[in-house]
Length: 390
Ligand SMILES: Nc1ncnc2c1ncn2[C@@H]1O[C@H](COP(=O)(O)OP(=O)(O)O)[C@@H](O)[C@H]1O
Ligand SMILES: [Mg+2]
Image 1 (cartoon, protein in one colour):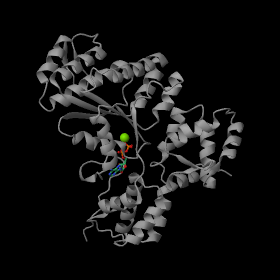
Image 2 (cartoon, rainbow, N blue to C red):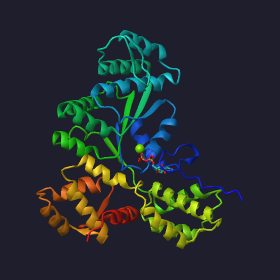
Image 3 (cartoon, rainbow, N blue to C red):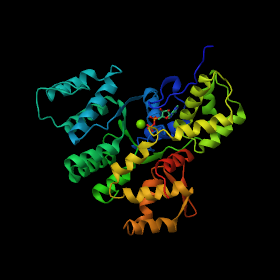
Image 4 (cartoon, rainbow, N blue to C red):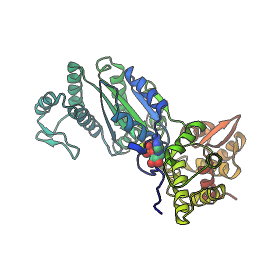
């Protein structure tokens, strides 16, 4: 029997027919762009940001030219502006526009090419910030509108801070703010900055304040509603050999609890493999229970959640880990318990703010009436298995 797999994709970005439309957030972001507002689009890793903006970048409304890139590898202010120059140039020249104009500017700077593998240079001391503003002036003159989607932007600020110190990182943030607030290029150029870690944490670490990023228009990506999650299941299962009746679909979603597409994809993919191995078409709730258990024993899907704490918050790591492990073990944690853990870890005044700014803001926990609990039961169960407390 030929077995048709569900339309799943796990790990890489969901594109083409793998992409399940997220109309609400797409149009919220477009509304900001069309109003010429720069956007900060935040959500934890693997919640679906990149899939959304790649779709947006490939399907812009009429008069905008778009370009998406993951910019995580940039490690200096020069790297960053060099990239903006190249992306802006590519976004317009891909459409056959402005090629000659940009070529003229480049020749003035004695740049032979602006390829992705480096820039062909005759003149070594190009200031890419200046070059970028020249390119913008041409966009304005030609009335060409460009949107750049810059993925993992907070990481670049973190990289610059690590490699070149707080002053350079702050300067870039100030420079970008000044630029956002000036009316010069407002109608021709918009940036959508994506982040998997809250930009505020990094900015506070660098300068102690968040005033340099407060003017960005923030968009958060939430989980799917039950109705959307059911539509998403249909998107995955339509045409597949595996059959899941409505009751079982609800059972599966309840098991996951927090409807992030990635978790639904993982479970469906593993269920499909299991049924295929046994040449059985109909999925039942006992299968789901068994496969859920196997899923939380696999680390690769969840380990990012722990890694990012040690990477971005080494000085708070022990406190954060103790709170999460206690919360996973007990299913929830009260304010008083947080306070006691904080005292034990020698954390003073900001014991609650740390939890709110890191664990709540980054999607680990939610708070209700002074109790904190995991958003995702799946993540909670993995956490409990991986970091048990006695
Ligand atoms: N709109 C979507 N349609 C289908 N799958 C999705 C969608 N959004 C997220 N996913 C699932 O989540 C995974 C991570 O998505 P991605 O866009 O890379 O998230 P992020 O950029 O937030 O880390 C994808 O590999 C896919 O399994
Ligand atoms: Mg991403």
